[in-house]
Length: 139
Image 1 (cartoon, helix red, strand yellow):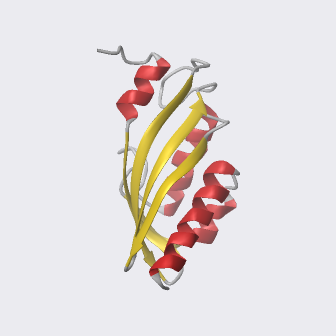
Image 2 (cartoon, rainbow, N blue to C red):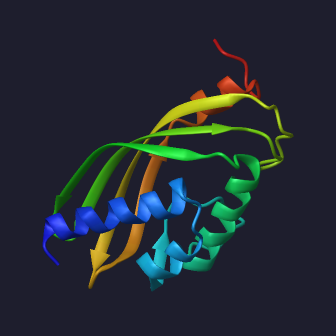
């Protein structure tokens, strides 16, 4: 696929999974041999592990959404800069619900093959999110 097609595919994936909460997007867009580099250590770095992590995330933040700020595609890679938004109304990773809304920045890189995402790396401002939730004190 051309780089612009890869960028459009990643946009659709983000919209369907994270903004529409369509869990079927995982099977439609991630390859069967998908490798996830961002899940916690107790979760396998596979497509099924990614699904497990996202299901838990949506329990903690049922109104979660992304604003897509940038999509940059070149070769077999797509980079995205996002703003995440959600209200913490359920337990997430051992943190009881706080009912607080948080917004934080994220950056992700996906490797593409044959119209699917085969590998993912990412960074999120988790410290900023946890501070907004009151789970970690601000400086």
